[in-house]
Image (cartoon, rainbow, N blue to C red; front, side, top):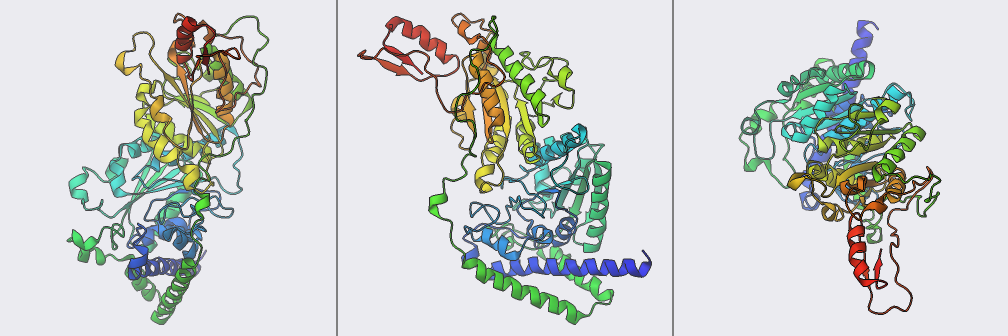
Length: 595
């Protein structure tokens, strides 16, 4: 390519940038001008961030993945989304392509052919970082295992876009740590406008994103002026080329002005004294000056801005005419439908010897991993050296390799939240939280991300996630290794919780949980693993065959009451409660039904 061709290509790209950035700016202006309508719906715009967002979006290909944040409307436009589509979400219309009117503006979820895929992420600051790292880990796993990606093209890149205030979130650090540790193919785009809501960087951060990146030696760090479209374009070309070819992480720290309000409900003039300073760095003004210097006529640029303003206004009129969501659809997509609705396989098995409950679980994992290359197991201490603190993963790493069964850091949030990204990559992750007592750091991801993905993406992003959790009092665990947390989990809509009482049910439920297209938490009572507690011998069973499945949500009759018996009661229970109930029922023979 000669110099004139290169210049021509560069000018063409910058004109494309000017059109896209002007479109985003026209949308921001229109939303402000129509505040009486648009302020009903909380929203934030990209005003001031447009250059780096355009430069990022133009590099994303259809096989790539994006985890956006709530100020990324210009990025979405640069992908090829239409203004009207974004406005449908702003106005919470039923035809909103991201959520069917269920979420805020610029909270995208997209699984559309021809465009990069955007898994669901919540509005909670920085919470998309862990699922994005899990997605990159899933992309890497497919490549390590020789599993083809489901879309043609160059190796996929994952982009996670976050604001500068998010870098102080502990979960963002967990995600950065894992991307560094495992050298994941991900671009961390940090858009730094120096503001939280009303808190300035100088009072809430001891470091910026570039400084933070130095703690992670495998992450290539780039610091740029994100208000300069040309510099942003060159930087993102470099970042994408590096990740696409080297398959290692990059952090792009882009300095940008915040020219709009924090959100529609928090006005900049209430608290900021740097508005004039930020206005001098307006990326659209700077780009116009650059194009004029490159020989583009002022009239041509005026024409572009007139065209996009008219197009945006027409799109807004059309968007307002779309139907509101049908209230009858409110309950749709709470849970994805499962195919396992009946008990199948041989529960009785063919062995002569009884099998411990913990070994029934181990054998279920062996069978799943043997049959499904898309399955992998990870968590604390499940790797080859120990195979789980209860030996519930013993020998699995030796049989299936360290890429499929591996240890993680002590990061319960990552263990749970990464499964959302793994699932988006087409995998079937199985993870373990070592003790129920320590699930709490992961509860944010379980509740905020996993449980809501299918519902808030309007059915686009179900999450396959099997989360194993040893639970309950046993031995000398004390207050930190004996918790029973099922009552909390059972109140989270959008997940399933099972708590088996014997090896047959545990094996059958683990299989069903693996195939279920929803997050499933399997609670496994430590006291039943080896049937060492008096009265729990029945937790040991003749192991069911490999085809055995127990449908989630159906109970089993443990003890029946003879027909016609009066003065009876029914106990509905689970886990070790079955054995307590049996002991109590022995005092009232024939009068207590246990389900």
